[in-house]
Amino acid sequence: MAPRKLAAGNWKMNGTIASLAEVETLMREHGSARCEILICPPATLVHPMVERAGQGVVAVGGQDCHAKDSGAHTGDIAAEQLRDAGAVYVIVGHSERRADHGETDAAVSAKAVAAHRAGIASVICVGETEAQRDAGQTLDVIARQLAGSVPDCATAANTVIAYEPVWAIGTGRTPTNEQIAEVHAAMRAALVARFGDGAGFRLLYGGSVKPSNAAEIFAIADVDGALVGGASLKASDFGAIIAAL
Ligand code: PEP
Image (cartoon, rainbow, N blue to C red; front, side, top):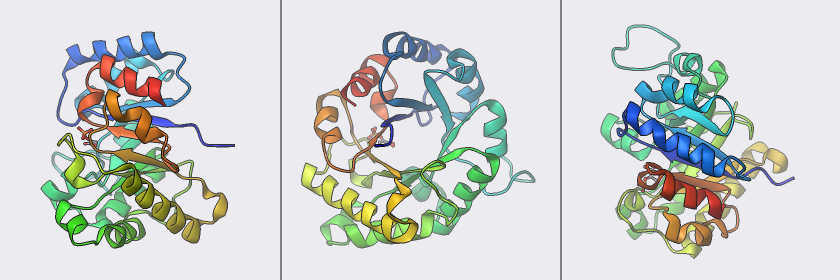
């Protein structure tokens, strides 16, 4: 059976308690969506959002976690704490974390392991920079990031992979359908080679997904959903993307 598609929203460092009204609208209008809906708000909103959303229509996730379970790591958050707050997913290895905090593939893999240890699923992000694409290195970069960031304990149940070209995030630019298809096919082949044919990981595309391009992107082979930044903040936009899945 084909895996259930996933519409995942990444609110980044946006949103306050008042923003939770968007989630209520989403639940009201997309309560019977065929796809799974996930929103990853800032850590301050994880628990309040879980309380509003319950564990029903909208799943709630974190945007990052520490590799350790607890300890002297001021400002960080443990996967176990996210789970305690009601999160069922956590994004790890987002390119903004890789760039702003120097996160390596090994660090991302350790965070994914911590998430799995805590019983929550990881959304592991990979993606090339514009310079890497221009240099013809895209498939090598993705292969390297997948090999280094996806831990051996990954399964389809505890791991989702998001292909997010760095140059497409927040820019309004997207790769061509052929470019997305090429990367997703390469990711699928790499995961099958490592985890076996039946592994069935969900592969998301992320980077300037909006209502106007969602249907076209979702029609591409091996695209099992989207990781959406800016367009996930408003229920009207995110709802239109959900409806296209
Ligand atoms: C993201 O940050 O994960 C993302 C895909 O952002 P946007 O949709 O705004 O490009």
